[in-house]
Image (cartoon, rainbow, N blue to C red):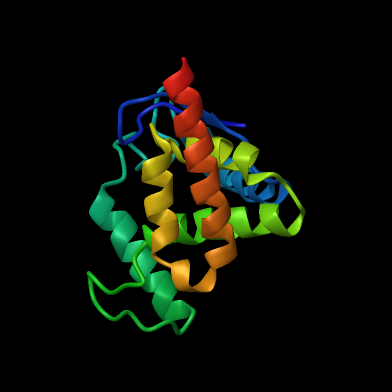
Length: 153
């Protein structure tokens, strides 16, 4: 489990992580954590300063180059933020393939992504709606059920 303290909406979040991500994090910790003080950011400079957004952007661009993925432009991407869209879509698609009830899954995905409402999560799904009509139909059903439940409270 990862505890996120300083998020976009200044909300504390706890999220589960996969075993493969845990392995990568442990490798990072073995190489870098001994340099850090208790209250340093996880991704920080040696002196504890937070890594700036622009540095993350440059690392992303280098990773795209390394993978031979063309960068089309700041509004066309692939942008680092596009990974969240891919995550949202793939998560719902995988849950659907496993036969999970999306009425139960969409609110969990919303929480995992740190959204305050289902509409914010749906925006991540609309970008690829042409590929996932079946999933989107089920999320619309979920939204209607959730909104209907809210009206009865």
